[in-house]
Picture (cartoon, rainbow, N blue to C red):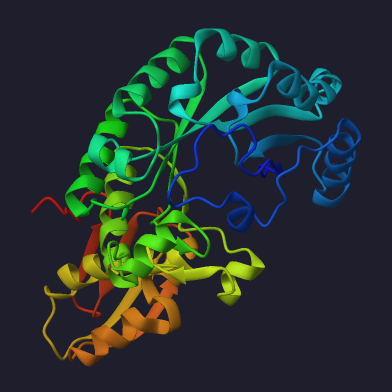
Length: 351
C-alpha cells in the first residue's frame, strides 16, 4: 500500500532565529499561519477521499514545532487524536531544531501520536553553523538524537551543503557524522539564495558564492551514494519547487533545478556505466538492462548519459527494463559477453 502524507506547512512558526538562508514562506509557498482544528480535519478528510487510501500520515513541515507554545502544539495535534484512534491516521511527523528538543517535549509528542521528528541539522561544522546564524552548535544535534532515540522516536535529518564557509569536505564530514547517529531518513537541500534573505545580501556584496549546479550535483551524488550504502533512505534531494521559485521570481542564485534529484541519480549511474563499459571493445554494440524504476536514471535527463557514452565512441543499442533485476543492479551485454554491476558495491567514491 502506498504511503500518503497529508502536509501542513507552518512556515517559520516558533523559530527563535532567522537563519541567513531562510525564507520559509517562499520555500513552502505557504503563509506563516497555523491551521485551525477545522482546517486540519477537513484537509485530512479530503485527502482520504482523493488519495483512495484508507490510512494516511500527517506531517507538519517548516517552522520549529517544539518551540511553539504547549497550547499551540496541542491545538495542532488534538484534532488528530480521534483519527489516530480510529486508524485513519497512522502517524504524525513534525520538524524542529536540534536545540529545541527536550525529554519533556518529546514525551508529550509521543503521547500525541508523533512517531518521527525531522531535525534541521544543516551542518555538523560549528563554524558553518555560526556563519549561517543557526544559534546552536553540532553538539545540540548529537544530544537531540540521543533524546529522540532513547524515547523510541524515529529521527530524520535535513542537511544543507554549500552554506557559507562550507565545501565538499564539510558536506561529507557532516553526512558521515549524521550516519553514525543512525537516522531513519535524510533530506539533502543544497543551499540556494532566496531574495530578501541575509544570504542574498552576502551574495550581492560578493562575500558569498553559492555552489554551481554542477558542483552541487557532484557533491550530492557522493552524499546520496554513501547514504544508500549505509542503508539510510534519502527521501528528498533538492529544494521542492514552489511556483514562484520554479519561475525564478524568488530565486536569486544557487543550484536549483526542478529535477535536481534525477540529475544526481543520473550522475551516479553514469559513473558506474563508464566503469562497466570499459570491459568491452570500443566498437561493441551494447545492450543495457536495468530495473524498470531505474531506466530514466540510467538513460539520463534528456538522454544525457547515452549521449555522453556515444560521444566517447560507445555504441549503445538499447536500454531495456528488466523486471527481474533489483533496482541497484545493471547488466550490459554485446551478445558475446555480459558484465553485471551493482551500484551499491561496484561504485566507490572513496577511491
